[in-house]
Image 1: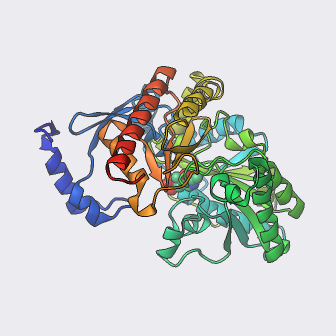
Image 2: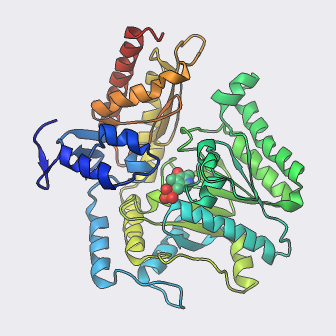
Image 3: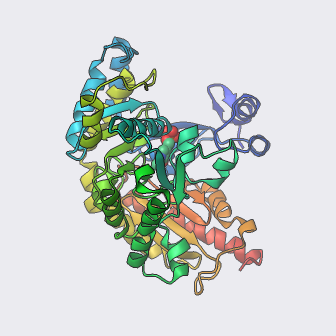
Length: 465
Ligand SMILES: *Cc1c(COP(=O)(O)O)cnc(C)c1O
């Protein structure tokens, strides 16, 4: 540590105040206080700087959200203008604001054609709470109020509120707080490396098998009791788990067959991440509802929402009556103004096309080379999302002993070498900003290799191999 000062305070001083007063999300407070947080002070493009002046390549886009990169003037201008003109007004009392109207109008152009209506929230978690309320409201309006159950997947992530964490399939989250709430059940995830490989199935056969776990669950519960199925096109927080191409079309067939609503949680996959505007377009489904957040504003300000497809919108609007749900910040004018500026910028820069035709395929090529590293068992990419699985023995794909927490060792090297790459179980994952260039992807891949080499050296030195 140096005597570098940021706003007149040393890193040590910031860390002490942080530990004294700020409880971080998903954090072991005591452990963090002992080591001290990294204080991030500035961002430009795909890079961050910390309070020690170290430059970091942010291969996680903040938290899957800074799709247009840091420091984009059109977003800053849109926020500034709106803050000056009208920083807040609600849309509860038969009132509306121009930015919320404009964002809904723009989303109607960008979303698949069945989506002409949009409900706004403040985050992805809130949006999934809205999904739970809305699908149950839909079935009540349709005269089938017993259709209450929502099916989701183990190791899916749908947020951290009571409903969001219940929809998610993170067992560690369920253990704290008595979750899931009633009426939410889980099936196994379409994770070939974890499940299909062990069953001895090809990827595509496994995709069909994993989809049929949904059918089994529907039959077990009784289709007349099932309201909806929800899933992320590609599981993000679960470890960038890209399903086999056979999976989603089969899920769609099953949902259609039993008349249940299909909800695509596109909080990560939406707005270009997969090389299409929405992940459902990449995987060939026609969902009834889409959850969005993160990339809609590139994370510059909080915003989320639910895209409401024709089938549900028609019932909500035509059958009438008040939907007794909403948030103070539903349609927040500053957030919506930034959303409009962000989506227009994605269009202007042709980022979706660039991910689909140029940077996505190039990252896949680089990951193909990374797959040859002795520590890497498999790689998966989809658009600008990538995962690699660390193995102890490349021949047999035998994993490291869990207590070594090899991915955290690797993450430590990334941290020390100016790269943000995240560890999930044995997988190392990235989702860089959509503005990343080919040359910057080369830089990212070189850093990944370097950190894998350092991790391998640790394993050799400590006799873990
Ligand atoms: C991040 C995330 C959420 C939760 O969003 P928050 O804004 O953190 O509440 C929900 N679903 C998915 C798929 C996510 O990645």
